[in-house]
Length: 65
Image 1: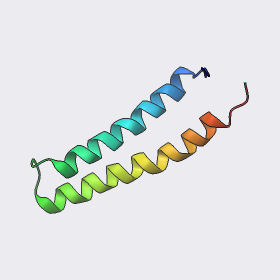
Image 2: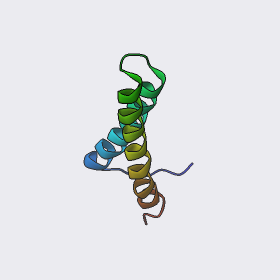
Image 3: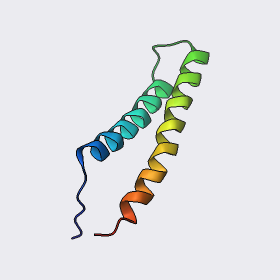
């Protein structure tokens, strides 16, 4: 099993991007807002979460030990 060490700020950023992905998905699937608002906010959060996860993942997997 491979292990990787993360600093607290790195862990916070990773957690934040995962939270944005989850919140965006929940808004897209939920019924709490008007349809137009739900789509705008949901897709924005989903895309920001996905786009910001890519460089984090690349940095994590290409990090030298």
